[in-house]
Each structure stands twice: as C-alpha cells, then as structure tokens.
Amino acid sequence: MPDRWGITLPLSGLPLREQRAVVERLPDLGYTDVWSAEADRTDAFTPLVLAAQWAPALRLGTAIVPAFTRGPALLAQSAATLANLAPGRFALGIGSSSDVIVEGWNGIPFHEPYGRVRDTLRFLRAAFAGERVAEDWASFSIRGFRLGEVPDPVPPVLVAALRPGMLRLAGREGDGAIVNWLTADDVRAVAPHVREYGKPDAEIVARIFVVPDVEPDEARALGRRLAAAYLNVPVYRAFHQWLGRTELGPMWKLWADGDRRGAVEAIPDAVVDRLVLHGPAAAVREQVEEYVKAGVSTPVLAPLGGGDPVATVEALAPQ
Image 1 (cartoon, helix red, strand yellow):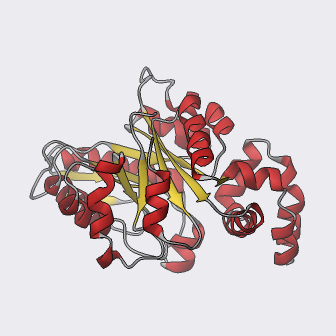
Image 2: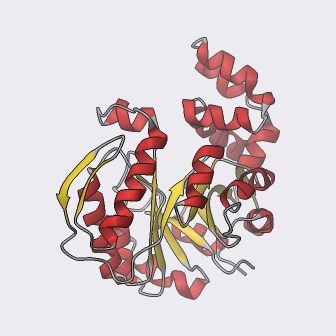
Image 3: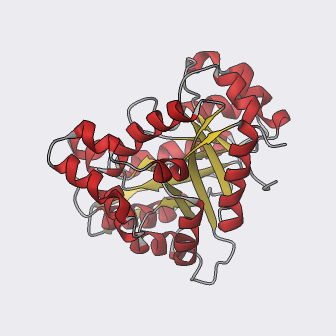
C-alpha cells in the first residue's frame, strides 16, 4: 500500500459537528492525511482545526485555498495559525481556483491567475520567514506586513496545477503540486513537469473522486453530472484538451449550445469510469493504487454520493 492515504474533510452526509468520532478513528483505520477543499461548503481551515485536535496523528492539508479570495496577509495568518496548532503536520495548498468561484461567486476579477498564484507563493515564502514584506508584485503590492507569529516549522506550500506552466511553478518554486480530475494514466503526463527541477521527490497530491459499493449505472450517473459541471469550466476544459481527450468534444459543443442535458449524456462511460472510480471498495482501492504507481505521492479520496459516510470511510481504508 502507499505510504500515505488521505481522505477529504468534511465528509459528505454528516454535519461537521458530528464527525469527531469518525475522524478520531482515521489513524487506526490506516489513514495518514485529511485534506480540505473550499468551494461552496465549508471554508478550508475550520475542518482542519477540528481535525488537529480530534486526531493529532493526522497530517492536515488544504486542497485548495484560492489565491484570490483572501488577501495575502490574511491567507498568511490563517495558514500560520493552523501550522502552529499542528506543528510539522500541516501543508498549505493554494491555487487559482476558477472564474466561477472567484468572479462568479465572490465578485473578484479572475485576472492573470498564473501571476496571482506565483506572487502569492513568493509572498508566503517571505512572510513565513518572518520578513517585513514591502514589495510590488505584478498582481498586488504589500506595504510593510510582518507576520506576528511565524510558524515553526514552516509548512510546505503546494500549488494546485493542471497544465505545464502551473505544474512547473509548483515544482520550481513550490514544494509540489495538487492535481485533480485526471486519470492514473494522465499522472504520467503531469508528473514530469513537476519534477524536472532537480526535485525527484516533489510531492504530488491527487484528489480522486470515488463512489464505492454503488451500482455502476448509479455511479456513472452521479459521475457524469459532476464531470459535466467541472469539465465545462474553462480551466478544466483547457486541461483535458491539453491531455488530448478529444472524446469530450461532443459534450463541450452541446454545453456551449445550451443543451445541458445532452451534454451530460454525451460523456462516454469510459471517461466517467476513469475519472470517477467506482465498483466494490476493494476494486476502488486498487484503482487508487494505480495513481501512486504512476507518480502520485499522496492520494486523497473524495467520496461522492449518499449512503453512510462512516461505512464508506471504513470500506475505503487501506488494507
């Protein structure tokens, strides 16, 4: 089994306030990591603060915090606070997110995402080092900020990345990359861009959508709807075009023409099956292991669908 085995918090189908018992059990079940996301549910930090207290053996990570939706100083403070609550057990994942989340939901212009992530990464390096930061970057300027409590040790900063430019930034200036919505085979196209800067062990965290122990038709229907929602976002569409996934062309055309139902139905089963892992829990675990063989350091399972979330966690635990 892989050295690391993570799961996404909070778990779906159970209020966060009621998740203490299952989080406390995660290390005994074989899980090493919990990683949070930030879109339309919880913020990224609160679930990890709770997990830091509920299960002190777990590593904690954000996958991801958007670089646009918090000011640089506030982002540094939030990350430093969690890093000091869980010394040596926290990894900060940042990324551009998408125009939907940044501009559509938060009213912030989604301008030059690569530059914003790059500048945020450089600012965080200086802030975590305890420097007084006064600098003009291309996407923002900082006037005399110094972090009042420097994290010790400094947490690694990983970059959410899809295509070569951001992947190389993750490997060159970050401590690794966070990837999602890709197949195990796709990892082989992605990993070399991260590890080409003399960092063969640069971490690659993969968020992997899973639907264990559900009938194939039900799992595919769920995966197809989710895939349509994500893969028509411009950044994800461009990613899959770069990967050469021409079989999604009909879906993209139907979506652009306003035929949402037709677009969902046009996603081939073979694509859904490789992007949203389903079947018996043991088979799902085997498919996750293929990501590790392809170059992923830390697989992070993201269970979808209904059912008992505690039973899902138990079923997906490494054997």
